[in-house]
Length: 369
Image 1 (cartoon, helix red, strand yellow):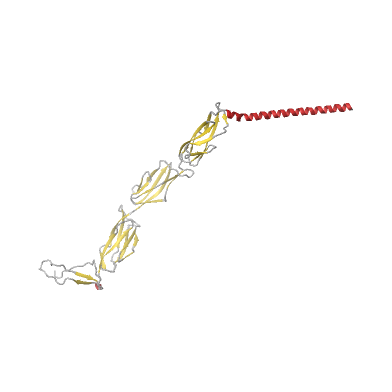
Image 2 (spheres, rainbow, N blue to C red; image 1 turned 90 degrees about the vertical axis):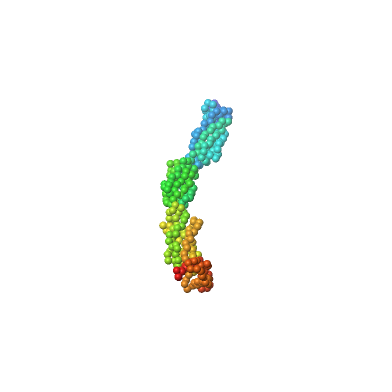
């Protein structure tokens, strides 16, 4: 039995020894593999530092932004002399004109203003360039101002085109064309200066970048003169209303009636009804004139805004028979028959209160031929 137990123990010790030996071998194998992996991982980094960058490729090498604020992305590849791609450690981006475009550290380019510029990337002593065009496209076109553009006859107004890209940024379109529908009413030059020729309406068209915008144009007449149509050379007793209304017509510089023009009647010591009125479709305005209380020549001033001088209408205010005293200031006159007298006949005209009445018309009649 002792011999059997000894043989069993020997067998057990041999098995344990075999297991330990196998484990050591496994550890050795794993250590070797780990060492190989570390060497493999370390080799490219050490190799990149040692390998010189021979070429840098940018993609795309040129690109275009069609709206301000558009983003373009440029990718870069560094390669050695054998054309093998290298993983860059330090990449530096720059742009020639930051006012046109800006670039960040990832190669993302943002359009800022119309123009052309170059983007440069520097890696390992080498540089690559890409050209960037910023060419905003007009996607919306309009004419600044109200839906109806009003311009006074004989005057000019500057119009402004409103153009924007797809992002709503204001851009200046190239090749703009202004067209006036009826040049007898209004004209417009290439700079957008609208000239009112004659009263009326027409249509204005702006074209650019294949787009069109329209506005209605109304040329407003400008009052330039006042013409007396009726009510001149009247007379009535002082303080009374003249028998006929005073009517005037306002016309423009082209001789056309001006409707809607404001007219003011100033009767001085008298009254005008109404004293303010607007012209009708024929450019005519009228008022009834009541004379002032004093006899003599009286005046009505007719004024229109925009016209420097007033139209003056004259009427005769006759003295009231019960309120006028005519006195002969010449005592006696004598002369040879058929010859003019040596002195004039002089009379004095006043009212019953003794107030002198000036500018009173006096009619003379020779009773004995």
